Length: 85
Image (cartoon, rainbow, N blue to C red; front, side, top):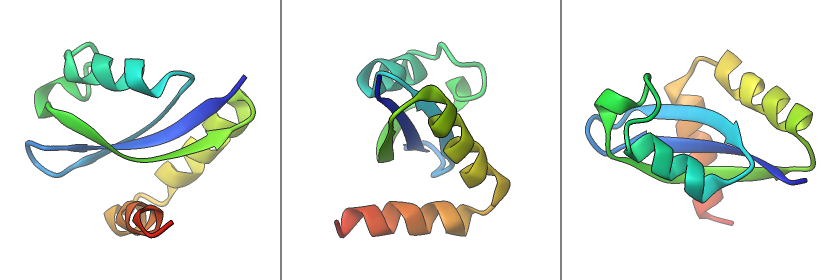
């Protein structure tokens, strides 16, 4: 089953959130409904980046790899590169 690593951007303050899921549309909807404690106060969110992975394990590994950079610049470079594909 396909899993996704995704990055969403807060339209309220420009911050980013990195996550993984099987269903991008449903997950974004849950973020925007305020059903995630961390993202609730920063609503609304828009999807700005995603990548496919063949299984949950590889998606979670990639999610953690992105988070370990602890860099807004790194996230913005991923988002910018994806716009040129």
